[in-house]
Length: 571
Image 1 (tube, rainbow, N blue to C red):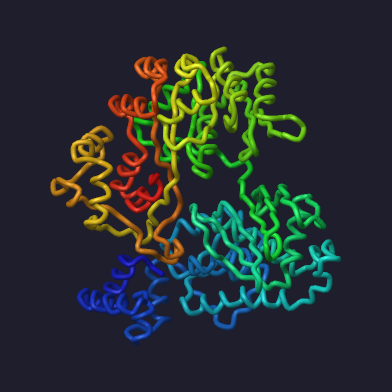
Image 2: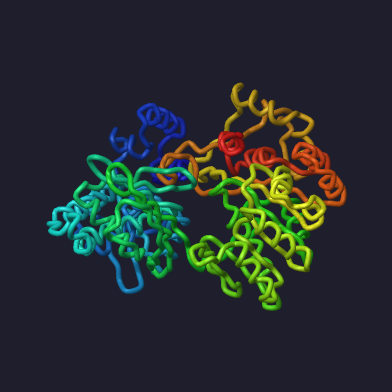
């Protein structure tokens, strides 16, 4: 569907509709829960063919009729079903280097560019009616039903290897994996229930149900993924972990697999890792300009520790890789020890721990010190031994990057003290501590402005006072209009929900950060065995902004929502 502003312009210029009438039609369409195009066609105000002929003419794209068009299955599946439905787009023809797609919104350049990257083909764009595309989308389900009608002759516990090699099972697993890639999901959950198999994707940190599969394919799917991951297919009573790689449209992807026994069978969770993906810049991660400068100054120091903290799944490793990307030069030796290796980066020596073989974070770190390193990244400091070796490395001329599981930046230092690390060592080896969370970004296609309700105002007033708020906006150069004198009059944003964001109102994620630099004053406080509260009070007095404050600034800029910030920062 065309963006509303573009559609209104088209209706006025091409179809000579009155602006007042358009607003009336829009209100009636909203009251019925319909898009304006659908309402106009249903009410015979416009003919559907005429509307899309007009779109094609105005935007200079050819029209195509998909009625009765025979689309080969291999062409259709160039775009996964969930992606095609979300964007009202269909692939209908292809040559060796060109994919022809039909869509309803020629202004959606982002989707077209995405398809180019994923398929490694030129994309020829055609305009088709919404009804024709919806009819073509039904073919996905017909294809799957046809696959599932094929006899699963070996799908029983005694013939698991043969079940995994059934064509329907192979195609179902392939479809699930490809869908997850096109949806930019981070994890795939395949969960057996009493009556079927549920597939869910984690997209932008939230699990979404994607499909239900017949119970008959359950054993075959589990066996297929076990074979891909080099796991024991006849073992059903203990957890198993593995990994495999596939190539999707020319991109190599790695899947980290965890399988555990549950009441109705075995549950599979797969983490999707993009191998060879370039590290994001600090700007892309969402660091405010002033805070980015603090990080850049800290990593220019020849030695010391850079610590990133936060819960599981908060993007700590991604931040460390961004910093490594800045430091990765031919004249430095960078070694990493991880669990697991999530990104493969050229020019960096990466090792994965293997506890069964005695290769732990501590033993690997000790070995690294004999490898003439300049920079060391330790996936996580989990115990006293690893902490001691990391601090020793930082004292002896190495820059050490690592992560810890703490809720904010100030509690990180007492956490190291709890590991029996002497305060003076913690004080003089720590350069900077970055605490972080991930929040969802507002979908740009359905972004809408609003003023805060009384309930939200009450919550925010508890977390930030007017004086602090004013200082924050001034310090980070966030502009306010003349009318925005208080929180009550400020404009914020949220997504209304559309097809392009799966009606969630969000698309993509960004970080919110709490960055604490260890200066001389803080070193003295740490040396007195200070509590987290003492450390926080000093840091706030000297310019540190909290996770909530960083998020609040991003909400005011229209990057994320107040609801997301409150969700991500609640204790």
